[in-house]
Each structure stands twice: as C-alpha cells, then as structure tokens.
Amino acid sequence: MHISHSGDDLSTTLDQWRERGDTIAFVPTMGNLHAGHIKLVREARATGGRVVVSIFVNPTQFGVGEDYASYPRTRERDLEQLADAGADLVFLPEVAEIYPEKDRELADVDLGGLDRILCGANRPGHFQGVATVVSILFALVRPDVAIFGRKDFQQYRVIQRLVETFGLPIRLIAVETEREPDGLAMSSRNSYLDAEQRGQAACLSQVLAKICDRLRQGHKDYRAMEKYAIERLNNDGFSVDYVSIRDSDDLSEAGEKTTKLVALAAASLGTTRLIDNMEVEL
Ligand code: PAF
Image (tube, helix red, strand yellow):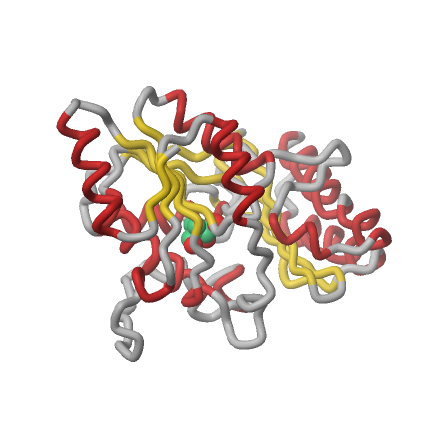
C-alpha cells in the first residue's frame, strides 16, 4: 500500500496507474476508521479500480467550539485496517497541502440552500467546509468513482449537488449505514460516549425505525411522528437538535404526495452529537 503525503507524489503515482488503464475509486475520510469506513473501501474495491483513501481532519468543516482539536487521530491503526481491506494508496496531507494560502477567504459554493437546513442550521459553515475540501480532494485525486456513506445523508446530497453544479465526471456511490448490533449507526464520534450514554444511544435508531414503520403503513401525520420521536429522545436523556421527515431526493419538507422519504435526526448525549437517518420508499 502506497502512502502519499503530498499532492505531487499522489499525482505521480496516480498518473502511472492511469497510463496503465486503471480507474480510480476514491474514499475520502477523516480517519479513526471503523467497520463503516471499511465497507466503503470494500465497495471501492468492487469497482475493480485502484482504491485511494484520504485521511484528513478538515478544519474548515468544524465550527467554533466543535471538536477539531480533539477529533480522534488514530493513524497507525487506520493504516493497518486499510492495508487489510486492500487499499492501494492512502493520501495523508497536512493542512498546508490542502489549504496552502492560510489567510485566503474561501469562496462559498452554491449548494442551493442544502447547506443551511437540518444539520446546516445548527452548524453554520459546516457543509461549505465539506464542499470545499471535497472539491480540493477531487481536484487532486481526479477519481472516476467516489464512495460515501449514507449515514451522512445530507452530506451525500451536498456532494451530489457539487458534482452536478461543476459537471464533474465522477460517479458517486452511496453505501448503506453500518450499524452496531443494537442498531446504533457506526460513527467515529461514538468513541466519545461513556458507558451510560452508549446504552442510551441506540434510542436514536429505534425512534427512526418506528417512524419508518408508520410511514410504510401509510401514515402521513409527519409533525406528530416527529413530535413523538423528540419526546422519546428527550425522555431517554438526549438533547434533540431535530427530527425531520423529508423528501429524500432534495431534502424538502415531505408532503402528502412524497413517495421517497427519509427520516433524519440529530441529537446529543452530553457533548456528543449523533446523527442518523432511515429511508422509506412507498
Ligand atoms: O464524512 C467525512 O468523513 C468528511 O465529512 C469528509 C467527506 C471526508 C470531508 O472531510
């Protein structure tokens, strides 16, 4: 497994592979890898191309007071897992490699408002930061295929919008959320939970599953379902940011006629913010 620290080294290796006719499947990550990430790498492997994984904790997607400094950095363990999973190259840039002009104001990308709703409402600038770093990584790696997890559903829609807006020749693949046996969606931030919080955390996926059952039964009382979920999460010790039933294509409010639905939630246990979502197609 090749390790690149610089864009130049990355380009040299990727150019050699492209000259041989290989395609590039790219998995961007912030490290602290778990089985959910490894599933993305396996999906990349299944495309038949060279598998490139980036590990970069992106400062521009963290807000003031968020966990940028303390975000778990577990490089050695990550590299072992990636070698086992069959990655061909790991890109490990420093901040200065991605953002060479330290004081430069980065222009916003037009995300059609997707960056200001749901998680974006409480994390201003977060999705602009994601769109910026993903654009830079796409420009460096120039992948044929890029693979993301459905757990970050809104992020996936943001990246789709980015690819459409700039007409990037990249095929996106979204991979199902990997879950713990009790249903908790796997996330790097789960490691912040103490034992009691870990016990409470599965409630998030349980309320979403319950909403999805009702949606499948044809219920349309979206506001009542959201209210029920918020109350249950509050009772189980969460501080709820939102629970929302949306059109899964564009994340607009679900209406009577919406057939592709997604129930999304963000809620904190102590200082740990968890997100999850489940989709239903009627
Ligand atoms: O999902 C993540 O891990 C990050 O948001 C991403 C896509 C790697 C951008 O920093």
